[in-house]
Length: 254
Image (tube, rainbow, N blue to C red; front, side):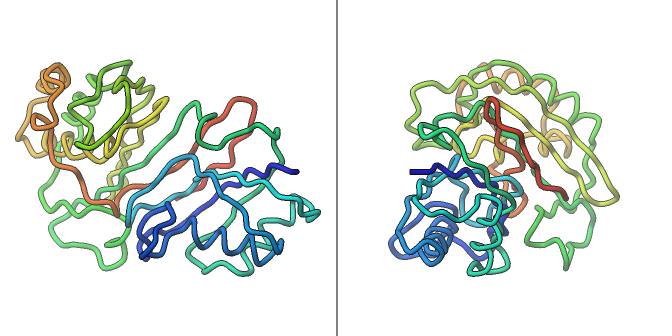
C-alpha cells in the first residue's frame, strides 16, 4: 500500500469548505471522487486541516493510501483531468506508510488579504476583504509585535473550539503593501479556530485607530474572545503553506 502526499491549490468561493459534508459540496469530496475515477478504488483523503466556506488555499496538504501503480509524478495530471478548474493538485510525493497529513504537521503559514481603498474591487472581491477606511500600517505592525511568541490565544479563538490547549507559538507576523492591497502573513506551529481571521480583525481595529497597539497585550492577557476585534470574512484568507519535518515544500504564489 502506497501513501501519497499531495499539495493542493483551490479557490474556495464555490465550496462549503474543505471537509466532506452530507448536503453541501466540498473540496475533499471532489478530490476523493477524482481519485476513485482514476484508480477505480475509493480512497479516504486526510487533509492537514479544515478550511471554511470561501477560504482559499495555495498549499493545502493531504494524503491518501492507494494500491495504484500510477507513477507518483503523474498523479497530479491524472487527478486534474477530472477536477474542476478551481481545484488543482500541484504536486505529489510518496511518503512513509505511517505519515499522517494532519497529525504530523509542525507548522502552517496563512495570508490574509485586505483591499484598502474607498471603492471596492470588481476583480478582487472574492479574494480579499474590502476596508474603505485608510489603515495605519505602522500601528498595525507595532501591534503585531505583541502577538509574536508562545502565548495563550484564547482571546483569538471562536467559541466551540474543543482543543485542550489554546497556547500557540506565532513565529512570524508581517505586513506587505502593494498599492491598495495589504497582505498579512502569519506563521505558527498551529492555529485555533478562526484565529487568523480574528487576529486580522483586531489589527484592522488598530489600523483604524479604534485600538492602540499596546492594547493587544491586554486583550491577550484577558483570554476572553469578547475583548478582541471582529472575525474577518473568509474570502480574504489563504492557507499558504503546511510544514512537515523532512519534506520539502512547494508553496503557491500570488
